[in-house]
Structure formats: structure tokens, C-alpha cells
Image 1 (tube, rainbow, N blue to C red):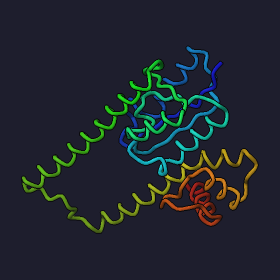
Image 2: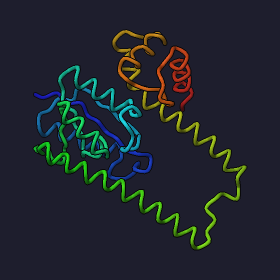
Image 3: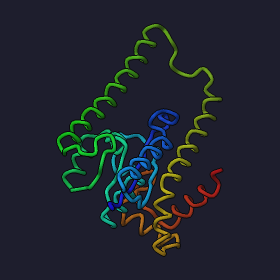
Image 4: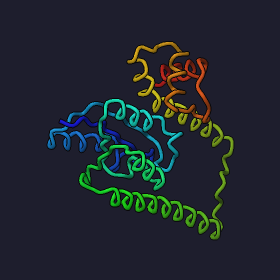
Length: 221
């Protein structure tokens, strides 16, 4: 039996669609059952597929986990790994083992072709949003907020929500580190840095930043 690490990703806007984490998990689990595959671990990430690998600690953790146990990363679609062609090409060049559920027998060429389509979809989506805003502006629609004070409060709430989301995305990595016996803030910080996981601001971890993140996780309802 082949060991698999399930990886599921969706953006905040994709929740409730066919790309929802639950639907991905259900589909991948059923696929493993049909094909006699062993699920060694599962990783779920809420993040944009266009982010760099440094900004995706959960994906990094999944890749590290799979490499440690010589398992295969299983995803529903190549876009769940990334919508960045260069990133997918980098995985292939490094020999990262991953299987696309929708095309389990896909060659490296086909995988890269699918990655091109995924990146093009992201580019066109951005283009449509930009065009829509420009059209609205030409027709005299005020794009700024007339309720700045209220929106500022909402802005702070959004910042807090983003921080919560980042903390939740790193939590599986920290739990994985704790399972190895490292439980001190200093030990966890060193392990995160050795795995290449960055803080929300792209820096290195210290005992204080680990403590702050753990406090935030305890406060998240």
C-alpha cells in the first residue's frame, strides 16, 4: 500500500464552492479507499494559490512530512498546490512526489500544462476585477468609502481576522513539531526556522513570536 499525505487548499472566497476543504477531503478520502492507499496525514490550508512557498507554512509542512516518510502528496487538482507555474515546475524538478486525483496518470508535461491553465485563470480573474473597477469609475461610481470611520473599525477587524487565519494555518506545523518532543517556545521557534517557515511578516521565529502566536490560538473561538 502507498502512503499518501492529503493536501487541501482553498481561498477564503472558495469556501462553500466545489473547492471547499470538506469537499476536497471527502473526494480524496474516497479516492484513497478505492485505490487501496494509506492516508498518513492530512493538511488543510486557507490561502491564495498565488502566494510564494515562503508564505505558505502549511504547504511547507505537508511537503516536509511527505519527504520524511517517503509518501506521495495527494491533491484534488494541481491548482490546489499552486496557481504558479514556476512553483509547480520547481516541485517537478526537485522530484517531489505528488498525485492529482483528477488525473492520477498525468505525465510531468500534462501537470505543467494544467499549471499553465491554472495560472492563466488567476491572471484573467485579476484582469476582470481591474476592468470592472475601471468601468465603475468611468461611470461615476465612487469607489472610496463614505463611511471611513466605520470602515476603519472593519479594517482593524479584518487585520485581526487575517492574523487569526495565519495562526490557524501554522497550528498544524506546531502540533507536528510538538509531536517530536519539542514543546518549549524556543525549541518550537528553532524548529520552525529550520523548516523554512516564516512569520506573518516574513521574518524568523523567536520564543516571543511563538508565545504570541500560541496566545492568539488560545483566544481563537
